Amino acid sequence: MAVQLPVLARSPVAGNSPSSRKGRRRSTSYGLFPSDQRGVTLKELLQLRDAHEEISEAQLGCTSQPQGFCGPCVCQNTLQEGTWRRMNLHEVMNEVVLQKYCHDLRAFSFAEYLKTFVRPDSGGRIVQTFVSHWWGEEFCNLISSLQRFAESECIKRQALRLWASFHAVAILIVNAFLSKRLAKVYGAHLENLRGIDICVVILCNSAVSFCTLLLMLLEATCRRRQALEWSFWICAFANNQYELEHALGGTVDQSSFAIALRNDFLKSMVCVIDSDCTIYKRLWCTFELFYATYVLPRGGENFQKKRLPIDFVNADGIISQGGLSQQVLFDIKSAITQVKSKEAKASKAEDERQIHDFIAKSTTHESLDMTLKEITKLGLDSAGLRRRVPLIFYFFAPVASFTLSGTMHWLLLACHEPDRRFRSFLQFTAATYAFLSMAAISVILVLCFSSFEIKWKKSALSGPEGGSTPNLTPNSSHFSDAPQDDGWCTPNVTEFRVRISLPSSYTRLQIRVFAKAITYTFVLAGPGFLLAPPLLCVERFDSNDSRIARGWLQFLLNLRSLWISVQITYACAGLCAGIMYFLVRDSERYTAKAFRGILEDVWL
Image (cartoon, rainbow, N blue to C red; front, side):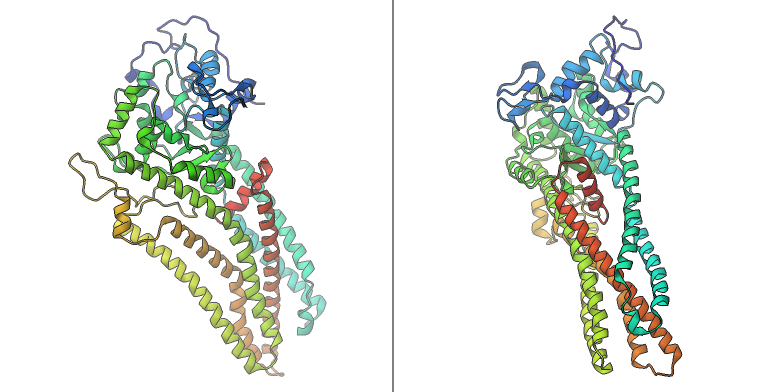
């Protein structure tokens, strides 16, 4: 049973009571409750949503005018006038949070409420992810976006490659035992060994596959439960809405937003983005992205330089993981071309002036716009590639491996003349190892590009290994080598592209994916090639009186038939998984999304 958040009665509280936060100074507030401990877990956000039905019900009619104190209507960006919608963050804060949990008689933030009344023993929660968003979005969409992100972060820790390895080893053991038993049944004649019942082999392999998939699903379920404890820094809940001057701190560099981003325990930053890229039209959101991409990598007097992975998500999924429909991706691509940070707005004119002045000390708005576009474009490119990757791994790799091994197998069986068979084998082996050399060259190119990036420290944007998230690599920089008079370095992304001709991060990502696909192909087909040379040598120099040679020939043919059955199993399983993936790729059902996420994360 879910724990309900206790609603506080509106009884008078003395000003010096521990439950009252009125009249405190900023230093006292953040001294007692530091910014890096003002995290709100996903579980607590879900409890807040589920405790109030009015948050989830579409009961508000959209208008084209701002709704006063409740803030702008979400329909100005995503919905048509007259559409029924759910409560946005403005309305949730003013009609739910500030009325039932953090009313003016106590005057504290929602994070302080959770620390005092919900988890008094454990205290604050260390912030793991900083959330950049705008208040006009539907609150339920915000929670869904953060839920998708937290589940994705936890599922990344799942040892899916370990389960895949376990599956492959289990199949080999089952096939070895099965092949040995069938050899006794069919006898020791080579002609009968070629007629091993493939259906029995595939049935046993299917049982192993089912057990492995079941274990993977159980582990994935446990990992998703861990997502409930993932903590977020959300300005609406971390800042005291009755003492907003504490959050601003006099200067934007001392604001609670900047302090939270400088947190040593912070792992990532997530941007909740809609099809209109509204966060780029809000100046505080632009400042947060600017601070994460420009200021943090350079460090400062009171903090060390750091680079945060930046993820773009919405209620449908994580953009860089291809969890969005093609229409949404197209809308974001169209909206990002219109980004102009200079025209972004804030609620207060003084905040606008300070943020614009702070940005002007470091770079120009045009350069910042280019950086924001590059970050988002990389996420969209990664999303497009991610949507094609299952086709590579579940179709290209199994079919190619089965074709290579099968061709070699039937080539050796069909050729009766030793000399002709030996020449055909040499030709096929030469073509095969030429193909293998292509895979090796691809891997070498990826390593060379990485070394170039480390050597010159000039790469702009790159995704992590596997291409799942757009972020800034530890060796990349947007800045020129020589600092200016004011101590800042100016961005030179365009200048870098002219001076050094390196492939884009998207190209490197493509090379990495195809290199992994080719490597995977030869992992499946490789043992078949290792068996062929000794098999040919034994067959070529065989004599009728040599029992040892006949024994080796029988053993090698047995292994070769075994490996062909493995190729058939992988090809069939891969094709079935690929077909199922494309059937559920755009489905919105939770089970379909869970299945899709597991398939995408197996080899990425």
